[in-house]
Length: 59
Image (cartoon, rainbow, N blue to C red; front, side):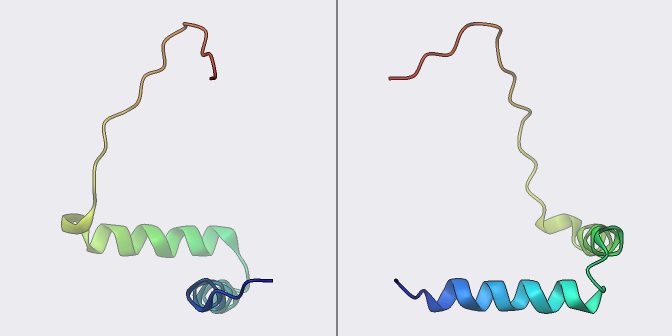
């Protein structure tokens, strides 16, 4: 199996971050909201994508 060191590092960081909040999703969410509020200048606001009622066909 292919080994990707970057992905392994990301997974390790994610695991440590979740462990620091005892895997409590509400606590993680609140922390991320605080980080987001502290760095509003770094946020990217994308327009809302509106989907029409037309049938979507796949090629």
